[in-house]
Image (cartoon, rainbow, N blue to C red; front, top):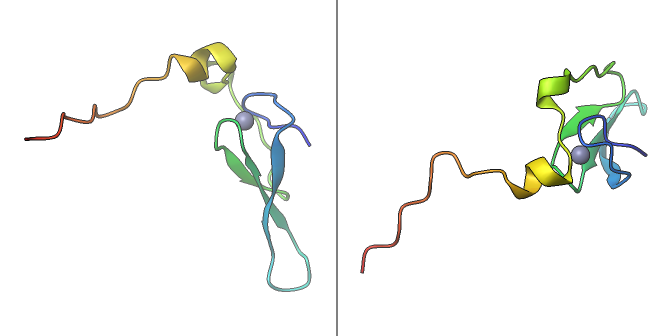
Length: 68
Ligand SMILES: [Zn+2]
C-alpha cells in the first residue's frame, strides 16, 4: 500500500472499524501520515513529503536543552 503523502510503500493497516468492517485506518511508517480507507485523499503538492524533506524537518517548537 502506498502512502499518499510521501509515496513510500511503508503504509500498513493501523485499525479497523469496530462495526462491520466499514472502514480501515492506514498509517504510514515513514512519515506518520494516517488516513481512513473511505477518504479520497488529495494531498496538495506543498504538503507532500519525500525523504529529503523528512530528513530536514525541524522540530516545532524546538525542544529546549535540559536544565542541569
Ligand atoms: Zn508517508
